[in-house]
Structures are given as C-alpha cells and as structure tokens.
Length: 103
Image (cartoon, rainbow, N blue to C red; front, side, top):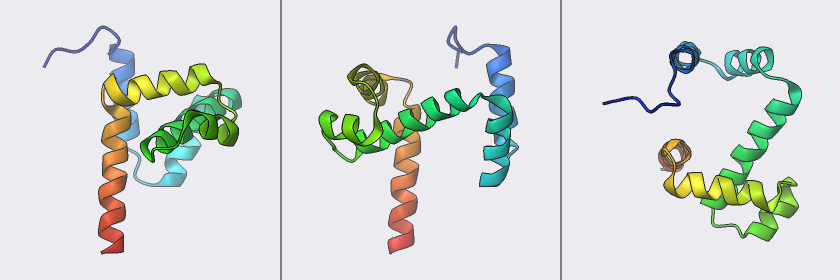
C-alpha cells in the first residue's frame, strides 16, 4: 500500500517509537517529553471530543463539557467520519474491549 504524502519517514519513525511502548506510564512520559503542555491539552481535548461524538453527544454539550470550539468539534467530527479512520479504529477497539470486560 502506498503511503500518503503526510506519512513522512520522520512520522513513521515516531509511530514505530509508540509501538515500542507497552504501558500507560511509558506513553504518558514519552508524550510529556515530546509535546508542550498546550499540545498535550489540545490532543487530549480532541480525543475527548472524538469519544463524545462517538457516544452520540450533541455539539453544544461537547462544547460545554470540553471547552472546545465549534470549529474543533466540526473538524474532529469530519475526521471521525471521513478521515484516515484513526479515531474510528481506536474507538472500535475500546468498544470491543469494553464488551469483553463486561461479558
């Protein structure tokens, strides 16, 4: 499969680094070293927006709960529905893990 233009070697190297991490604390420490606090907050906010959209929450409720702008919510929604399927793939894995834990 051909890589998209945004999938640079540097990005692929970063992806490989993430794959080496096995525990939540390793990931959080790596992210903290890699990103500024503002970048971490932005990433975490986008993830919260994606989870809430996936749960069927309305934009106004998401905006109120997260403080995200309507533009950010719209952007995350667009990527959730028609992006590279990154959000959707992870959310589906979380859904299936949750179902296994409650069974």
